[in-house]
Length: 438
Ligand code: PXG
Image (cartoon, rainbow, N blue to C red; front, side):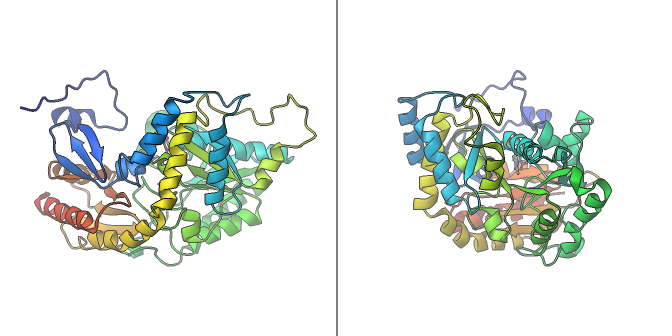
């Protein structure tokens, strides 16, 4: 007889529908490779790598060993006024793996903190450069940059914002989903017109008042909205033309999720600032990072500054936490030595076919994918957008598949270590779920 895990309301669960969960709790007791093991001993394929963060597979021994070793060597030391070796090693390593021009890493503990940090760096940069009026930020409808004040303000998923009133002032570009692109495999064509909306906002506010534009290369939580082929390049052009910093939130797209190491490389467009988190440690220890090039860093530092002057009064108690650094260094070893880019590239066509083979099933109104991420969009039922994805998700959970539901979509980001058989089985389970769905 398996003991059921007791649950309670003391744990105020994040982003979780309480009543559905209480009636039918989904409890994960362990993990192995691409699977979760539930409290009643069932194996469930993890089609979203935890929460887009365990792309290299669960319970990697290399990372567990590095973390264990570090806990026995240096549990904690601040990165304010002191340093420890792994922080410098990780920053150097990370910026070597990242594309040019990234040379500097500011460490955070999450994607939300990376959003705050990147936006504060952008404002401070313009001030250091003698343009203190450049303070406005522009996000995008359907964007997700976490849940802190900055991320909530710049994010563009309505239900995540409406409860909280006016936060930081922000403008939003239109989302990149277009009706004519439904069922496109990979990237749709064109899209310059979507980026050109930025020119209207420049006309409205004047570039002398705008600090930065922040977008995900591929909107993840918003439903895996793949940017059309000309979109990011055009966004880059307008930002460059008007001296507006372009921030890529690569919290999901970083570390091979879109095929190349980073979304910037997949799409051939370089931002000025790149935000990371999640797969940076393969999800093992919370950690994020904000990468910049020399130009931004150099605006803050100067060899002639007084010895006691702090140019950037920003940072977290746990910035560059030694245990997180150890986890990230080990994760980067796995990333390179186990060829995650190659694995993602080889598996991406299998994921594409697994998802697109479902296009003619009832309720499916769009299928989208790029690299190792994808989404099925389902039609609303009685005006309710999110009920069908929820019901499919719960059904799949009981049939050996964890699939993430969000808004009107089911979202996929399997580990790069998944097998072709697992992706085909995932597709089969989804087929059965959609056929039983009302
Ligand atoms: N930026 C992006 C692009 C993200 O996807 C964050 C920032 C925030 O990261 P933290 O570590 O603060 O949670 C994220 C997080 C979903 C879902 O529904 C996605 C995320 C978080 C929760 C749910 O797909 N991504």
